[in-house]
Image 1: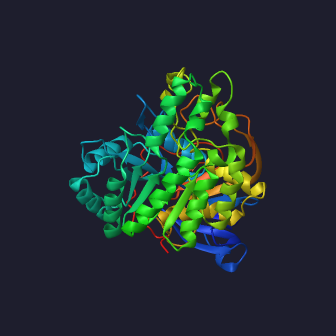
Image 2 (image 1 turned 90 degrees about the vertical axis):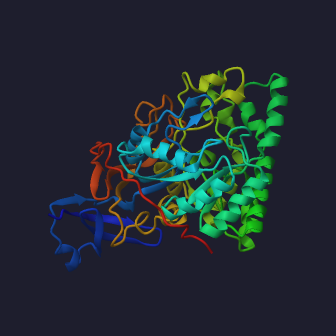
Image 3 (image 1 turned 120 degrees about the horizontal axis):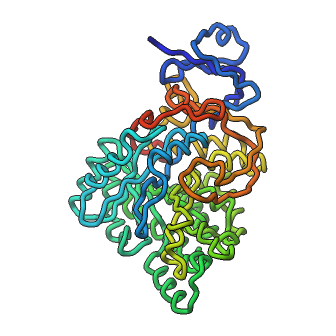
Length: 467
């Protein structure tokens, strides 16, 4: 038996259009869209009708950068796939792409299998995986081909974290050359980790141990230098490049220059760089540890370049880099030594609301909001038009969004498994009311009605955003 749902009376917003329209869903897919009040729309019958009058009807968010249960710095990210995907749903995100990790000396397959086991049967929303490549060798390169064939089409490398995830320029070039052949997309953490480690050692020797020094040693120039180097290596390899969590004016300039030259170079930023700053890192009594992430928060003046990059499409995607660690017992591992503070912030639940606030504040248009949070991440990582839009044939991942509701972000009310909010006390306008994931209501009028195991693993095609 087919199940039909009609969403009536809302303003349907996609990356390309805004239309007062009704949406017909049959089972797990969107079947039709018709302008509200037209004979075609009025003729629809359904078992379930959702009244979206006065609200937006938008595609479910696609968060292309999360780290559930990531081992880091002697501990683990505090959100499991179950808690993290439930929180994502509360925030209007219906697909995440997380990172499976290859350990040095082990195969890509072993890492991917481990992450599949963590997520299987646990997720409230759909999910996919990127592959972190920590050990480039001939076997790894062959495995990259196999993973692309089965729908893991993006590979992350690190110019940071020597001794953990770090790849040198030769390893990066080899992986890029391989991705040029197999259609994969290299994602780069662009910071000069070798130089940063020198600055960390020197700062600690001077007794500079507080969280704010995390931001001071991870200099914007070292992000820009690594971004430049990654671009040139990708150019030599003839491969596309996606730079993750861009935080600095100088790094945006490197991306803009490359794109002006016609290169397939892309940039992602995150809400923390748009809304937070080194002022947070400098909060007294070790409170700044809550804001330790890498790349680090920058002085507030960098924010204008990031907003401009989002408007000019020199930055294409806003993801969260959601990697939460509790303040008590986890962030506190770095008391007396900022280099031991686990790197990461919670944010998977906040992204869609913060970006809607950017619409309210005049930084972005409504369609650009949907473009950077839904459509482009889906295109960038081979999920479009199954994900990221509202169109016939697409998965029925749909959010009913109240653009007028006001809320105050707080650890007391969020659903992420972490004991603080990076945005504590921040007032925002706009709120998720109802969320459908493949036609199934996972949030119903501000109540969680989903379940662990509803979310399905989703293989991906290669990048659909190349020039």
